[in-house]
Image (tube, rainbow, N blue to C red; front, side, top):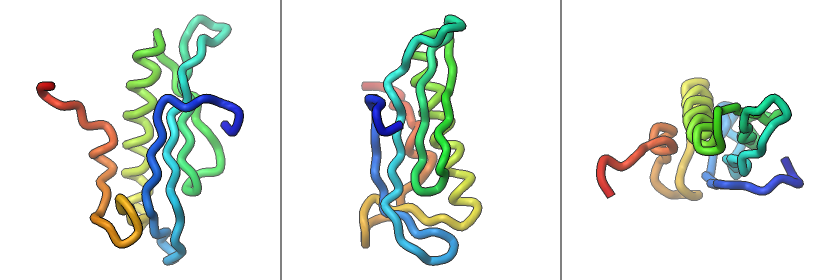
Length: 106
């Protein structure tokens, strides 16, 4: 994903289950139109995973929404496996559920 543009990026301070400390970089790529007609937004969750995940939707909007939901779900799985996430080093805990929250009113 190093040459791709990002629609969204968030960096949290993270502690792995083995106690090592990391900057957790969560990225959603700008959706691109794929040859099959669908749109794809690539999700990157470093350092928890070395691979990226292309998330497909019928249009760019859906691909982005699904990618955000996927990222929140995967971060939740890492939290269940013992990863701890914080807004910053020494800061308040960060919740995976907060990644995909949609306000009820603006």
